[in-house]
Length: 86
Ligand SMILES: [Zn+2]
Image (cartoon, rainbow, N blue to C red; front, top):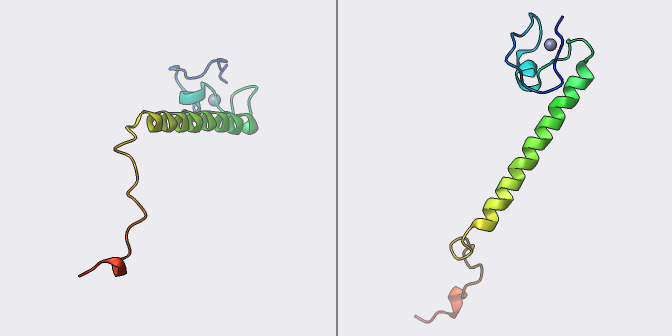
């Protein structure tokens, strides 16, 4: 069996039958000693929540950097066509 490091991401060979994706990202998988499917699921959730938060922060940061004059939506009010004179 493998003895997974506590830090994430390893370049060590992945033991046969273990999850390559989990080893690549977390450095361990559910069937490594001392782990389990619940711990692996939790690790994926934490990772994806962090990625989501980082993506949202990047979007918010880019929104604040935009030039407000070029990003304004088109005006929603306009003169009614009946008011026009031929
Ligand atoms: Zn493993």
